[in-house]
Length: 164
Image (tube, rainbow, N blue to C red; front, side, top):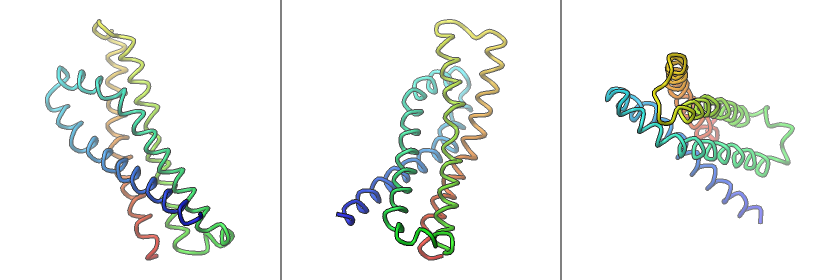
């Protein structure tokens, strides 16, 4: 039974983790820069259409990845949990876990942006709303790039843990 649990947790952890990292890198370094280059008339409607889907998908992928990873660490190392940080493997996994949590913290800015754009449906933004949108957009872009690199580093830490 434990072998089946480990297999299921690995599939969830690796599958959703690969999706999360790949989607974050694609969004931060391919889609967002191309849309920004096309200008606000294109970027705005496309991002407004994508955000209601992207936010929950990214959040669920991040949560499932982190929870499955925690489950794996507990199931596979429960009997040696007291020596977890005495090994290079344990440190690699811990670093990867911390980086994963940091990488998943962009959701609140995206939610604020979604709420602001929904409040202006059918009308142009006021100067204050325009400024807020610009600030949120810059923060989202910057943190999105940082977060995508951070989750990539988490992936590298976890992938190399067994060799540490």
